[in-house]
Length: 433
Ligand code: NDP
Image (tube, rainbow, N blue to C red; front, side, top):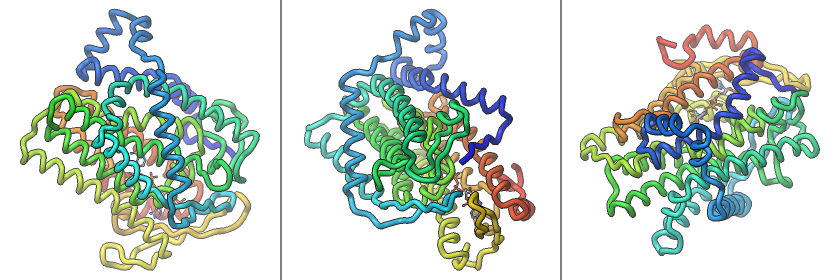
C-alpha cells in the first residue's frame, strides 16, 4: 500500500514536522494556561517572555508514578472491556486490497460500564476523580511520551509483523511514522489497536474527563455552575452519540482510510483527552452563571446540532446498508452508481447519495459538528479566547479533511465523483463554500 499525499511534498513535510514538534509543547501550554494562568494566553505569554525556555521547561510537569498508574489502570480496564464484553459481530468496509475487517460491537456497553464504574468509585469514596484533575499536567506529560513510544512500536510492527495485507511502507521513514503503516493493526486475531486508541482510550477519556471536571468544580465550590452543567451534558451527549454509532465510525476515514501512525493514534491518545476536553478544563475554575433560560437555549441548540450531525452519518450509512433501498426525508433517494477498481484490479460499485443532507453539500455533516463544539464552549462566555481553541482547530481540521476526502474520492471514483460534484457543487456550506 503506497502512501499518497494530497498537498505538495514541501507543504506535507512542513506540516508533518511542525505537528510532530509543536503538538506536544502545545498540550502542556494549554493545560498550564487553563489550570495555572486563569485561561489567559497573555499571562502565559508574559511568563514565557520573562522566563524563556528555562521557564517553559520548569512548567512542563514530569510524568509521575501517580500519572502512570492512572493511565495504566484506565488503559488496562478499557482493553479488558474491549476484549471481554459481548457484542454483535460487525463487518467493516472492504479495504483497497479486498480485505474486510470484522469487529465486536461492544462500545456502548464499554461506555456504560466505564461511566458507572467511575461515578461509583467517587460515590462510594473509593477513588476521587479530583486526583485525576490534580495530576492532569503529569498525566498529559506521561501520555505525550508514552504515546510517542507506542507510535514507534506501531511503526516497528508495521515493518516486521503486519496484521493484514492492508499495510506497507512509503519508503520514507517520516511519512511511515506520521501516517502509519498498517490500516488494521491487531494484537492476536481480535484485539483491534485502532478501536482501542481511537474509541476506547481516546473518545472514552473525553467522557471520563468531562465528568472529572464537573466533580472537581463540585468538590471545590460545593456546587456545579449551570455553565459547567451545559458543557458537561453536551459533551456527554456527543460522546454517547459516538458510542451509540461506534460501528458506523468504523466505516469512516479515521478507520477505513487513515493508517495507524502518529497522526491518528497519537492524536487520539493525547490530543483528544487534552484539547477536545479543554472547554471543560477551563470551566473548572471559571464557574460562570448563565441563568436557567440562557443555559437551556444553549443546551437545546447544542443537542439539536449533535442530532443533525448524527442524522447525516446515519442517513449515509442506512443508504449504503440497504443498497439505496431506503427512504431519505420521506422519498426514494437520488443516487449515483459509481464504479471503481481496487488495487487488486477488481471492479466494484459504490452508491453515492445525492439527496437528503448529502444533497445539500458534499460534507454538510461538518457544519453541525462545528456548531455543536461552539455550543458546548459558549457557556465559558467571551472573557478569554483559549476555550475556543478547539472550535477553531476543529474548523481547520474539517476544512482539511473535506479536501483530503474529496481528493481521495476523486481518485477513487473518477468521472462519477465529477458527476456528484456537478450535482452537489458545494463542499461544506450550501450556497457559500
Ligand atoms: P465519512 O467517512 O463518514 O464520510 C466520507 C466517506 O463517505 C467518503 O470517504 C466516501 O467513502 C463516502 N461518501 C462520500 N460521499 C458520499 C455520498 N454522497 N454517499 C455515500 N457515501 C459517500 O466522513 P468523516 O469520517 O469525515 O466523518 C464521520 C463523522 O465523524 C462525522 O460526524 C464527522 O463530523 C465526525 N468527525 C469528527 C471529528 C472530530 O475531531 N471531532 C473529526 C472528523 C470527523 P467511500 O470510499 O466509502 O465511498
